[in-house]
Image (cartoon, rainbow, N blue to C red; front, side, top):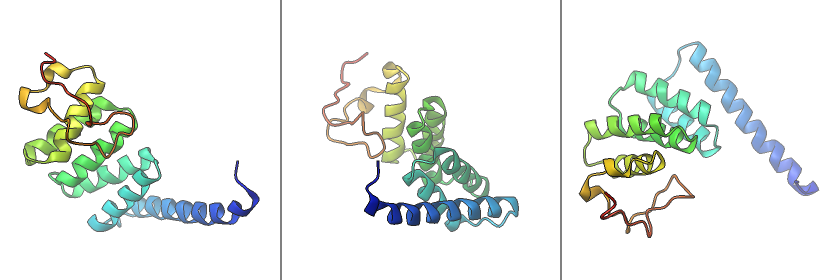
Length: 151
């Protein structure tokens, strides 16, 4: 429950969010979307945990630039956060095809495989993430996670 003093700030933030969302849908309808605005909008929705709209914005961005690694990883993170692990894994694998050295895509792939119960699909060199932390999964972190020998 919000305190009485917090209501003005809540309504201010809510107003900003709803106007941004309305502008996004208007731009989608009129095909006025450009890459920087789409990326910014997708990140905005992801930050506010509006995964459906963030997914839509990333999808439109990928229609403009199909091999955009940042967009693939961003959409993968959104889908992962929305517990759509199979779809997230598909995005992370697509990002790795474009850039096999992308660390965020590798981490996302590993976390998605773990959530799907497919640890055996990880290659041996992908199993020691003990020094890395995930920036998109609060419940599951790479810290203290040792998968060596988990075959």
